Length: 236
Image (cartoon, rainbow, N blue to C red; front, side, top):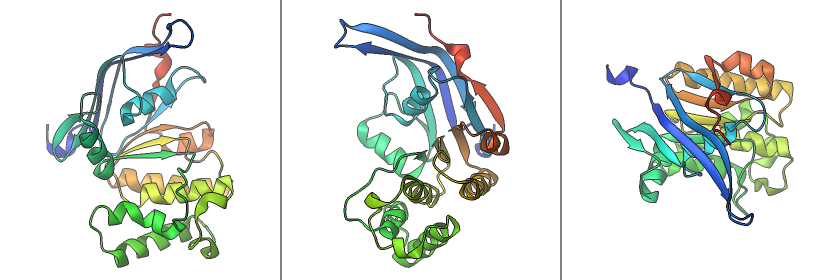
């Protein structure tokens, strides 16, 4: 297998059970023995009804949830890093340069202007300010965020405007691996179309993606295959 054909994400025998410590340690099993590989240029869309574990799987891959069992390996600097066993420093380094996460919510940082917020992922990776600014301006313009907003912190923006800032911030870095958790949920049809184009461009460049999309048109436009999470439902 050549370097270019290696899966960028390998999920093996993953299981997740929540323990409710405030309810006499009651357990809620979500999934078990889940396996998934995602190659460069693939957008695997998680399928299934609400509650089957799509968001739990996404957060387990990103390292926000600790799985009960199994591994999540991400190809980083030519080597696989197991997110489930990596140190916090290693996870942050993988996120900084390899593993991006696009959600429907922006983590609003007070007093930081929108343009600076979008530029940050490039600046943190050594890109010069002029290049980072030009790319940020291009993305914000493409996403139709008014220029008058660029010097303002996004805390007071509408939900759809904040989401566009989040998308610009996530796509500016050109991450090899992207997790897409309802990135178009608050967008109108024209902005959804723009985001679809951004996703397709990233796929053409060789990114590997896992996504959750409740909008059927968006899902049909970007999915290379569906992954039925319910097939791995854990026994109660």
